[in-house]
Image 1 (cartoon, rainbow, N blue to C red):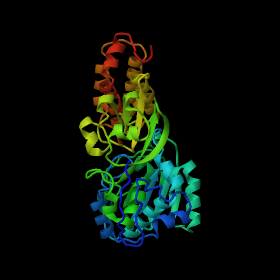
Image 2 (tube, rainbow, N blue to C red):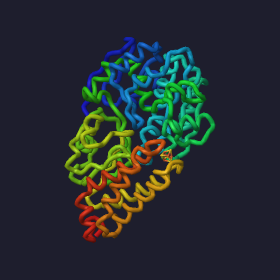
Image 3 (cartoon, helix red, strand yellow):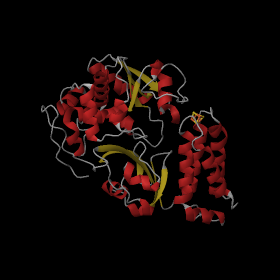
Image 4 (cartoon, rainbow, N blue to C red):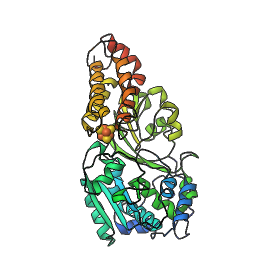
Length: 407
Ligand code: SF4
């Protein structure tokens, strides 16, 4: 984590933070510190903001990783006033970064929401987050006398942060995913064009609007510019949230926070909908391009390490059981497929030596993929399939009636 010099300001009033700590550079959550560190709220028209975001290379930090400029530019400029939503729901149990951001730098998220709203001519601004985050947000809004943003409580369920679930909840409905026949940016909240960004994405947008794309790119790599928040947990403790340069190799991330990669037998990257990587794969860059060849993704910036004394199949069975219970049970793959996959992996993890189990897990994983109204079955199937790959020798050992870790 080498500090770098990024000092170009779009407006030339104040220099951007010069180290790796950007989002938390104000030090404390109050408006005075925020203003001293970052300066006044900039105003940007739609074209300038889209152009700056395009040149910055900022991608979404909520999980899907869409280019921020593309999402913004897909909101129609047809005279309708769009709604803008800051999504800090964070239903993923392994992610704590949005909570950390809303507690420690709520004004950056508010700035991002106001800048995006002003540039798109929005009349409705919403912030959606878990109950524990509402107090710091309410305090920040009061501090700056800001009454244009409506705050909504997200329930603590895994799928409550899915985009259509968020829009449904804000409209007064149930916070579960809906069939998406039209993009939210065309028809979302109460039929209005709706731009929904993760809170971290909006915080970066607020900094890019002030200090420019070149400043943003002064850290990270060409294809993974800037910094990002990651939540680390696992055999070395945590969860803890860190701001790191994007595109760092996983082993370097571990080393930089004092974890010896040799103590790690595997890592789950991308969260409960993510992918297990074996120890020999951990030199991959933690970025979209770096993880894609391994069939993995950064998700919401989650890394969970598994120590050498733990059983990866047992850990996976526990997570799959949780995911099967979290389904909204609206679609067949969730209602029937996910409990069946969870049960098969549990049998494999805890003593059933039926040699057909791996094959059946793969068959069901393929069967549910792409069949739900949302990506919950796909993510759950990906996790199960990746466990069979990353823990291949453990699968063989379990089928012989042995478990090296649980002996
Ligand atoms: S796929 Fe599952 S989680 Fe997604 S909408 Fe259908 S039942 Fe709900």
